[in-house]
Image (cartoon, rainbow, N blue to C red; front, side):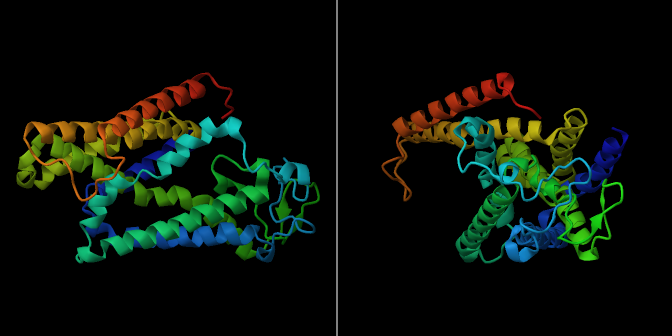
Length: 324
């Protein structure tokens, strides 16, 4: 527990000041960590492929370190079903949460000078992210099967790359190649470091939204020190909360449940409100983006579906048999 609090303190010392900066003032940090993400995906996918030195037949690429965490070569322990519908309530909120990024688009778009290229930039970004998610999900699931940890990068804690040997007492692998140790350390540690990049983006977005809610049309008159106060209000409470809720699985499960509200309920309510507001002001409600789905009936159905899913998943998390 003491180590956890120390790391939380170090993390807060780094991310809270970054949250108070504008995005253009932390470009180097963002680009550096983006490169790290690409390297990590390459490491995770490459090391579980046959040509990545991870043959299940003749190599212990992920040493079991005494507790036999990974029984390489055991078909029963490494296999996993392609679909497991009973666990849908467990994974669906997390999957949905991974698609919630629209709130940060204005912040990111504001930094691009040539706005005509925004469509191309986001399309390429979506393609790269989709390929990365697909590769990591399929390859890691195929290789580790039922042994995948909640944070899958922790499966690389004992990565050996097929090098090294067991100690005399059989408790650990020794004489592991330096490159295998580097890959292991990088994959295990980088996600924690990468939050340094993601956390300020969310804090800046939330802080700006709070400023907009409070000052409305007078946002342009807000001084920077006032914006910093709102960003502190956005960044400090989550860190305080993390001191009490330490399990990543708990955080992702319940945060993912809120994704139903953010992605399904709120957009539907905003649509209904804006349609009725436009009608009251005798403003044309049809826009360039109108389709057969942009009706109050569809919006109401979307809201009801989001509310039902939120309730069902929340009940499953509260009363289901989940072993964290």
